[in-house]
Amino acid sequence: MRLRRFLRASDGLATIEYVIGAAVVLGTLVIGVSAWNNGLVSRLQALVTQMQAVR
Image 1 (cartoon, rainbow, N blue to C red):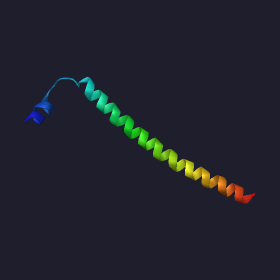
Image 2 (spheres, rainbow, N blue to C red):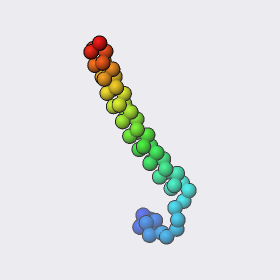
Image 3 (cartoon, helix red, strand yellow):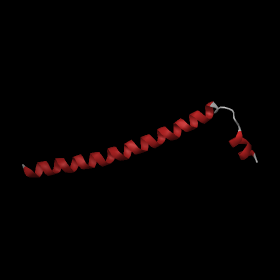
Image 4 (cartoon, helix red, strand yellow):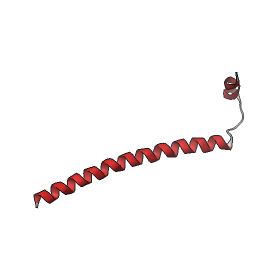
């Protein structure tokens, strides 16, 4: 019952809800950038290794 009342409430979002939402968005962004960066670093290392082998 409380959930229905909460979902039907027409009040604006509380500050804590904005903080939680921002934390979720920023956390997801950090995880994505970190994973992308780790993949990029490994590819660059492989490229450098290949270039050293050519010499």
